[in-house]
Length: 209
Image 1 (cartoon, rainbow, N blue to C red):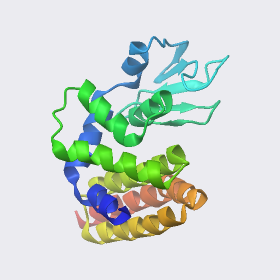
Image 2 (image 1 turned 30 degrees about the vertical axis):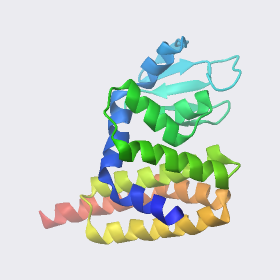
Image 3 (image 1 turned 45 degrees about the horizontal axis):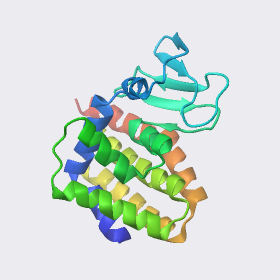
């Protein structure tokens, strides 16, 4: 099951495109408004709310609107990421379900493969991992990091091989249920690994030109 899921996420660009479309089209601010959750204050491209995930006396939940798509971070309960993760946290559902329901809200026509994706992810994580939210989110986010990085560098062959190596390591850690190391790998790739690789790629391209 692990190998099937990893191959599905790694090689099926249609799914990555679906997620990217959701992130760009579904604003967190609109989603919160639809749930009756209104801003407490504004500061540039940051919008402050009382957190919809935990009981919040002060507005510790921030939506960042300045990027390619909206993201959020709560400095009270330490939750954060994007609209897919937010729906998971608020509705207590899995990532597969969140992707599926957000697609329906946006009127995206899902064929059988996406319904199967939702089913497979839900069954896999619910059966094998009691601590679903944390493991599933890290797994999802590492896959997103790899895809976003490869997209920025035009799917350079040696970097595709590099990402495949990362995903093989993730496969082992998933089997071992090593949440701590998965978490560390995610933050290293997000904060240091991929940014430095992107910078190097851009510098090399300038030299060639």
